[in-house]
Image 1 (spheres, rainbow, N blue to C red):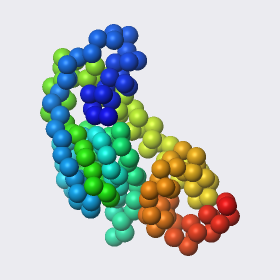
Image 2 (cartoon, rainbow, N blue to C red; image 1 turned 45 degrees about the horizontal axis):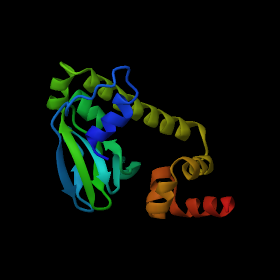
Image 3 (cartoon, helix red, strand yellow; image 1 turned 120 degrees about the vertical axis):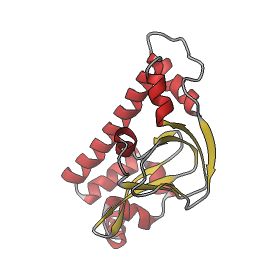
Image 4 (cartoon, one colour; image 1 turned 45 degrees about the vertical axis):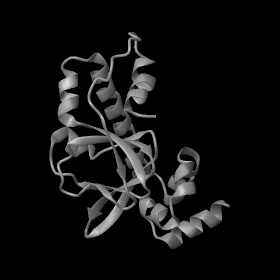
Length: 189
């Protein structure tokens, strides 16, 4: 899937007006090698990326420690959203943890499309809403659930994380030590 296909599936298909607009903004493709950084800490995000293949991780630095805040799999957008929307330095870093194929667009091209395209506006709103819902759910889980409960949700809602991400990275994502994750996994099985 690419960005145009995503827009047709998520926006146009569900729209009252089923008319597809020819590419609403220019997109570009790029191959990213494993361990290559896509967005650096402190960088102002000018691009939004759509992951065609591969896996990325986003991290944040707190008290000199790097913490994993998300893993992204194909057919999802990756971006330092706050930096992209506000044009402020990124507080997160995004890195390819496998070789990746991405498609991206520039913020200024999206802003230009907003002026003339209802589909572009619906797309922007949809992607922002999906990002917000995802982040709110993750934040809520960490504030209200135990590490065991969060891990159990991961089993149900994001099994690809457990299948494709090393245990030490999953522990970092859950904010616990690998030994604690081993105990939780033993309790569950």
